[in-house]
Image (cartoon, rainbow, N blue to C red; front, side, top):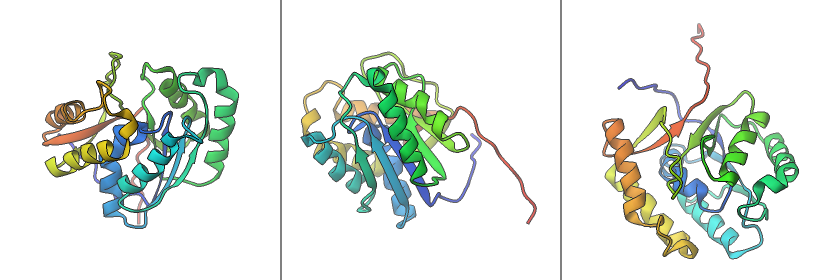
Length: 216
């Protein structure tokens, strides 16, 4: 296993199609990053749920996953499951979001996601964030679209458990769904952990990256 060791970023952008996508896809990574960098700048955009109880859940959840740092969060009210019909609005919102900051890393759904809302967002991200390191997170669901990740973030048992605990605490509206339980969250994380010689892991799809060695 070859590791690429870098300094933690100081500014990140996180994007989700629905409230809870970000937390499910990369909640433990958020916990780890904001613990390592207490003044991390986190900007977030979510396409659906604005003006509903789901937005309230998302604001409380992301603050918890960011270790108490309140992220700059905008939640749109695009209808769930109808993102392709709102292409222009989503494109404009993403362009406005891009102009609002200069992140070192962008987190978004992975482009092979079978859910139409996730996939549309993933396809639009590189049209705005053209020169940014973009990591695509995975969301376990009934579609058989589980990707072959190219980047792993190893997790301890405690961090994986903390992610699952916070998901249940902050998204009560999702309780009872067949994909929203400890077995699903920890099962996927355990499989990814096996693939990188760790107890657990979150995994990401990296489409393209640049590496430079500059003289100092």
